[in-house]
Every structure is written in structure tokens, then in C-alpha cells.
Image (cartoon, rainbow, N blue to C red; front, side, top):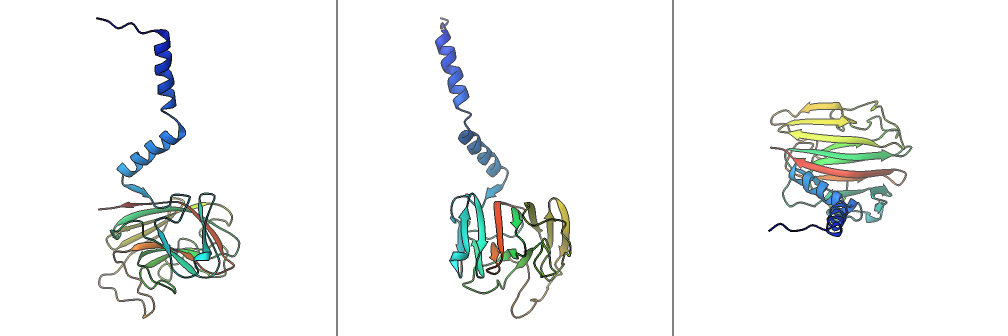
Length: 221
């Protein structure tokens, strides 16, 4: 027996269909698709959940969906996943202010204070006096002119596959470095070797104000 569909029933179906595509629903669908593709959001835009700051915790805060560093030296370590990262693709949007200095550490591990001893640093610096500028692999392959400006967002990518490290800024490869086999530690203070580890964002000094958002990572085979 055929069921008679009334005009009101059709309208009700249309309302249900339209309301199912609210912004919140679409964001949830995007997130599911993103995670299925391997990308994971590292920052929820509202809190420091998944992150752990070592010294001077007042140097880090969340402001309008951004991670903001402003204050004495402090490093914000990513602790959102138990399994360390070996091969990965990391992305973040970064904005510097005049004279500021910061950094993105990778292949590192949490320490209570001091400059991170383990792993490498991707420099964040457009106009600070340090000649090593943004997207430098700090003290390994240095960039003098990254081609970006203070107070403007740029996208920093870090890709590690095996012993190969690539740093991309706004889609352009700035560093393509392969770590030598059996490389010794850089010094007694800085190891600077690839190892399973995590990420850390740097608050460099009280005069440096830097913004980070849209942090995400994808594990690679």
C-alpha cells in the first residue's frame, strides 16, 4: 500500500535536512574527516589541554583561539599523546611581533627548566637581532631572509622522515637536511639529534610576543 505524503510532511523533512548542516555539525564532520586522513588537532583553541609548560607558566596564555607567549623564558611541551613522534608532518600558523624571538622544538622531551637539550629547533624570528631567522634549523642550516613580515601570519611546516628533515614556510622549502648516520651530540648542552619525542613552543624573553594557531600533526610511516 502506498503511503500518502502530505505537504506538511515534506516541509518537515526539509527542515530536518537543513538543520542537520549547522556550522557545529559541519565542523564536527570536518574533524572526523581530518582525523580519518591522519591529521590531529594539537590545540583546542580554548585551553592548554594537551600541553605542559615548564618554568614561568605565566609566559603562556590562550587568547581568542591562539597560543600566545609573552614573558620570561618558558617552554610549552605537547603532551597530548602518549606515543612519541618519529616520522611526522607538523603544521602551525605563526605571527611574530617586532623584535620578537621564539621557536618550535621537535624530537625533544619535557624538561623542568632551561633551553631544551634534546632535539632540533625550528627558529621563529623575523626582526629579532639573532641572525638566524624563521624556518632556520637552528645552528644546523640557518636562514637569513625568510621573506615574511612581523604582524602577518605565515604557515610553518616540519616534516621528518627517517633522517631527513624538511622545513617549509608558506609552502616553500627553506631547509632540506639529512642527518648523518651515527651523528654525535652537538655539545654537552645540546644533543640536536633525531629521536622519538614531542614538540615544544618557546617563549624566549619578556620582550618577545609571538602567536600560534592551527597546530596539527600527522604521523608518517
